[in-house]
Image (cartoon, rainbow, N blue to C red; front, side, top):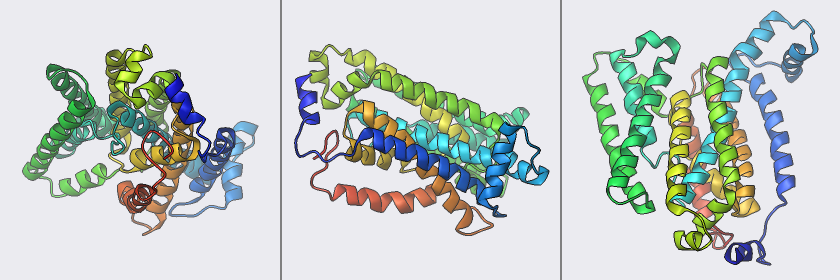
Amino acid sequence: MHNLDAVERRPDARRLPVAACVTVLVAAAVVTVVLSTAFGAEPLPVAVVVDAITARFSGATPDPAYDAIVWDIRLPRTLLALVVGAGLAVAGTGIQTLVRNPLADPYLLGVSAGASVGATAVITTGVLAGAGLWALSLGALVGALVASVLVFGIAMLQGGLTPLRLVLTGTVLSAAFSSMASFLVFRSAEPQAAQSVLFWLLGSVSGATWQQLWLPAVAVVVSFVLLLAASGWLDALAVGPDTASALGVPVARLRIGLFALLAVLVGVLVAVAGGIGFVGLVVPHLARMTVGPRHRVALPVSALAGAVFLVWVDIAARVAVRPTEIPLSVVTGLIGAPVFLVLLGRRRYRFGGDE
């Protein structure tokens, strides 16, 4: 493990203590949840929000109106944004390691484009209408999983899950799926179909319910735990497959397991929130710059930073042009693009290390 440890011991590495970063981010997440619940079409005082939340645990009798606003409408939405932001950051960290590409994001493997076909089919044709409120999420999830299977099958038939094959296969199939979604919109007799599809493709957590929260929460927690458990192997894979093999890492099996895990995670996140750009691209880079490239420290910092970031993005989307809401990808793009350009301009930073 000498090559990996050498990076950690580099004397000119400028990093913040991991414990301090995690503590600050956890505190920021708690404060952010409370503040986010206070924002909306009708702003609420922070004290009212705190009272409504604590009343459920203290046995006190909450105000029915405030209780409904906080618990039934705003808190599920805020927690969904928290979970999706954490999941996208974790997925971005994993995918950048899988393909060893600093420009990789969670949608590189064609999962989002496949989900768009499923969601567009639900919106334009009414398929899965019997699923009720779950129809859109179910259609998107099915499309995402089908796309994952196709990418995996084609890459394996071409010789295996190498980074180049994954990137090229995912890019080509994404273009094909996007064309299919556009064709479904073009053929639709519903005049509002294009607007509905566009809003979903750009991401939103509006209308979130407690029932929608458990599946992405479980997917994010399980994925995070598994990636953290395999952090040593991921560190070796980030250095290179030859180094990883020399250290005893089963590279082929690791890539297959990593692909399957990330495909399911991204599929679930896209199914409940649509496509939200830049979170899974920028946040992992910021985490590596802050605490270093080791996955055992970069993963928790990425997850917490992504969670806090997306909740604040949702707040901006709600209040910027009130009462209309802006799709989340519009806000993340306006913030993420200049931030990423600043990262590219830092001479001391490179993917997988500090410099």
